[in-house]
Length: 311
Image (cartoon, rainbow, N blue to C red; front, side, top):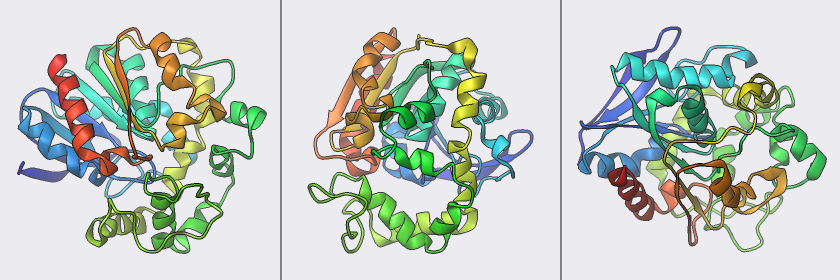
């Protein structure tokens, strides 16, 4: 078992709580919503055993990291800046960036903003979507405002986090069940939730999420979504930019984000062969949903280690 340490690291204006282990070439693991670094618990040991140094931060606004106030504190330049500042603080020249969900949105922008600091990318669940003629929000509004991605529109509503914070246990349980591969066939978010927890989570593991979001709340994590329009506007210089670093994509075949074209996310899996100049493969894991690295850790670890060893 890899020996891990969890420490606060000062990255300038804030501190990030970072789980670290191992030595060797650096791999940074970026979690998504609503998650924390703990979502990578099944990956850290195998990556260390394969010869890599792993850093998994609770990203800003999450878990035990600092949570600056204000929507503007969670724009793409701040999120990318945190990754670069973490590398600087740890005196790491470059790293492979592995991102899941929102982490898979931030990771490509790290490579686009600072290609000198990124050796490769592995994107889980969310494919690379180049900046297009419409923002994600505008695309959803125009194509399917009541579809699977409508939650991004709902997250723009001021105060919606209060609904989640009224019962964080049920909120988190609902998030995990709604998009996991073990959900009943034909299940929708309007249906009654299955009892208990999804099979990939035990009570102790779920407690880690509950304690983290009891501390942080949901407001600042949702502020990441409230910057989607602004992110599109300020990234105009990278319009239709292609990723030039080695890139891997992994998702579950029961993950609507990777298999639904609404909002131009799912349709981007196949288009990654156009938008990435060195795509090393796209993999859909049978039976897994959106929480792929937790639902199918052995297969995800195998694919990640093979990719890293190929670099």
